[in-house]
Image 1 (cartoon, helix red, strand yellow):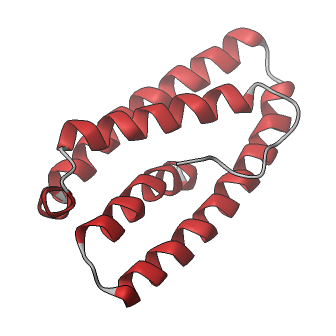
Image 2: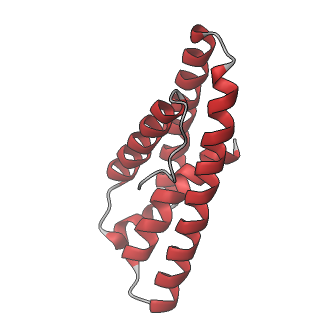
Image 3: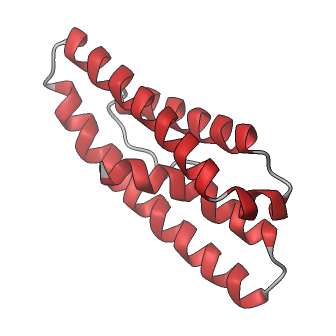
Length: 121
């Protein structure tokens, strides 16, 4: 489930950079986001190959299970980090929706044969 943490990090560190005007934090968040995009691209490439060997029903079940897990995880992160989200002017539901959109995009990418550079946040 490391991929799940990385997908959530793409939204969280973007929001964290919005919450504070500290230039050191801004640079740190940019570096973390760059790193996480690379991790997501790697997982996407590996999982795309694995998914290609699965029967369609298995792929569908895996994707739906992962999307449900991500939805619940986004709720937990949004609740736990609600103060940072509030400072950034991002609602918990907005954070959760952004994570769900990223999850849907990545799930679609997993079904295609060519890996892209990264998941856009």
